[in-house]
Length: 74
Image (cartoon, rainbow, N blue to C red; front, side, top):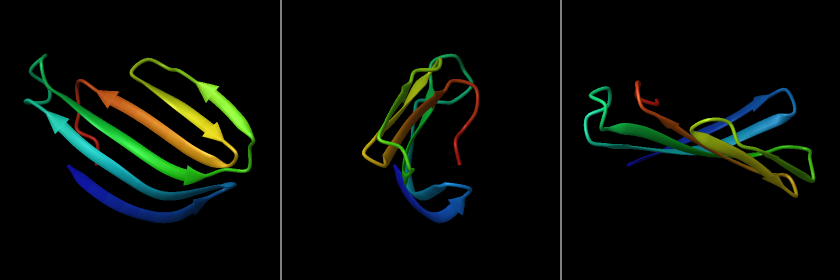
């Protein structure tokens, strides 16, 4: 498990940090890589659930989770 400070502004989004971890061997069909990122965004509420994750914004706090079966998050 790795905590990566990002501290970067992309348009209206300010990325704070991300937490990355892997389970098993990624790419063999059983392992996966996950990323949980935190940021600040100028929105009151937003929710989206794409395949393998979600994006949630509540009162400006942005939380995004992504799960990758074929590659490793960095």
